Image (cartoon, rainbow, N blue to C red; front, side, top):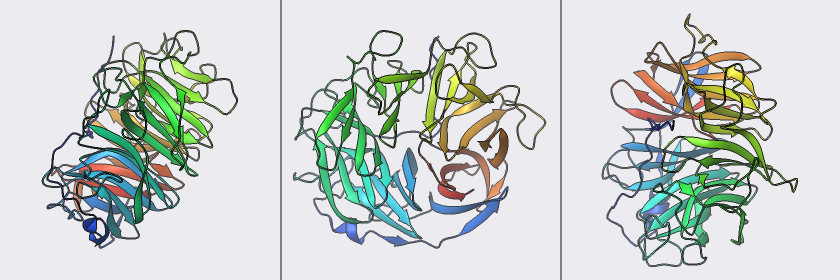
Length: 418
């Protein structure tokens, strides 16, 4: 049985918008925000942007925040959409909201401007992102032409690292960045009907030369070859955490793997032949993973297709973090399930949990102790919380980047000091 799951925080792509071949707005589109902070459950929340925030260089206020966003060293970058549904990548630091790239921004080396953005990553003073623009394209190209780009945070020119025009690759999707090294998913040919499913994982330095480290010919542990790779991947100290897709499904993964600097190829963390810790039978499929460079946290669905939280480095040492026997912090009920998005860094796992049918909350797990960050019904920023999400790679030290949905149908991005 294949489980089809749609993230509540929707990834929006392929929007057409009026484009202007100028970069003036990129540099002038910086907004100083009134920085406000709120406390809830012992945490401090700082608003980055919400659906009442004017879009720098765009039309009106933000309407949608995509599930591609990044945090590092107090800096934030995120993909958002304005009132005309034109996409852009926006930066935040110290109360200043600016533009990394939007549909006014020229694509380096072309006469075109960007039309789509797919993923973004931060490391130090650098921002890496993937995006597209009109063109003949081909293969698995989503918007005609696509590429991997790099620029300094809130300053400097955008540099094309690798594109449809400069390489044989037609698709560039997920990206992570560490010490000037980029891991990116993409390839030449599509593996199914989903743009965030790729045929290869590649590495690139700032010089722009791509090196394929995984593709559909790569043998996987246990036999066979990988059928394709999910856009979400994580780079830690030169090692890569990645997932194999189940073709033509969204949010259902066949297995979780690591590629380490040991010359031994991919290592299995868990797949459909892995016994469920503390349960019966094997995993059905998976719904995402993250790590802090050592242990991996993952959401695995059991034989009844119930998603719960596990951690470990291999099938032999996986352990339960939260399942149907785990009591929800501050409640008498136990968890009914764990949401797909999660973040893991510094020994602290952040996850979304469900209980008693429709109740939701965002929690931390550290050393066996669970704590609530935000629950449905809590008050934040003068509004009542309906749900909250984290993402892979959205935890940096004691800071966490989350998307909050409110009961009045507004939403916002917040930085949480844990």
